[in-house]
Length: 525
Image 1 (spheres, rainbow, N blue to C red):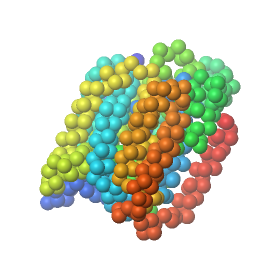
Image 2: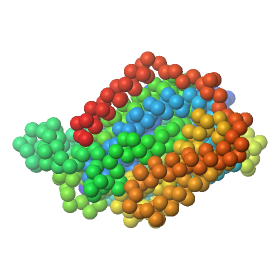
Image 3: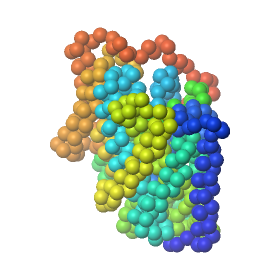
Image 4: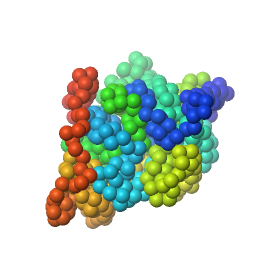
């Protein structure tokens, strides 16, 4: 498939317009030099709609659109549990975690860990996050995005990665988080409209191919009738994909640990909420994002199931979404292609900005040049973003080129570390006796125990492994703390000073999410 001249023109206009808007919203008043709060936290001025849209734009990228659609092709709607359970997780983060972070006035997650524990925990976790964001998340988004571009346009994967890297740096490098967050409004609108178009056309094509041309709703009904196994949300132990989504663990087990880590303690996600005008504004943005998460499976999973019916002979599951994009007629394909690139570029920009934030705040200003000026720090942050992107371009193909499903690979790899991360933060939040040594033991123990289970108990589903390692890390941290004397830590958080109460609108929004989730799982249990 190739883009028409009109499609190419539409896409070029989108790219130029986005860069122009990003630079325009990032401009400073005459005489004001951009400082670290401006660059890394958007001057703490983000409204709720920008926070909600930016959370989704940072989250939904190639690994979701391409990778999760590919898993929809292989496993069906069950993979949507990552999206639907995330909606509930967001609300928990907004109510219980975000008030603590905003009260502390932090820039980064490692910074919080020093304020609660000590500098050792901060440095260890800063180095860890820099490595994971660069060599796992950033590399995966670049690779899957370039793969999609190759499928749609025929452009070589290497050139596709270079284009994505240059484009995302081009619109985010000057303005920082403010440029990313405010342009994410455009990105999310484009993503949703383009994604819904692909889903509608795929369902309509199923109706034409297997029915009497009754339209998209008939196509959906045909899918339910022809491939009902693709709509089983909870897998039995004898299911071929049980090891990826082990039954009730997606509702009450290790899935919670994965989601709490991603939505609560992931720098390139939480950074948007840290940049909010106020706590209430951040919570409204999180509620908005939760409802968008409920919609995402329609955009990213449904096309994969449709591809299973229309093109069951695909060589790679990750080709499902780009293949469904081929149904979009010439003239509109440019818009849909722009929507895909919008999602990819937004995530790349978000990740590089967070990498630059952690490197500048937690490594450069902490270890290398504590007296660095604001101007120097912003320059270092921009340089770190460029270096991280270059590294990701170089390692993407060797790391991901031969994998059958990139989304599950990302979950599997990050699952080695997330149990310890969640244990550290939960103990740091809610147990005043937790010590720095116990935090380090939980962090290191998470990786060691996960590797041990991976090597010696390969039949254990990784989500169950995450839950088991989390419990073990919590026990280890508690034992270490009690063995050291179990006195109240001098950096313990005073929860009485934190405002955990939420507005009526937030509570009603939360109730709505819960009721929708109950209805979805009751329908497709």
